[in-house]
Length: 58
Image (cartoon, rainbow, N blue to C red; front, top):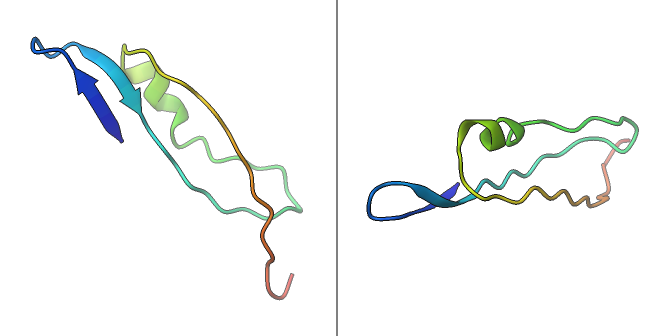
């Protein structure tokens, strides 16, 4: 998590990065960083990216 603020403490920027592993056999996405958007009044960006990696034994 990274924060940027004015001298008075008002947040001006927020970054919350999460890495998660899951199987390609299920449609599951951990909502770890989702609540951050609701808790902090700061401009922010939400983006998702995926990567398919091999799973030994799967």
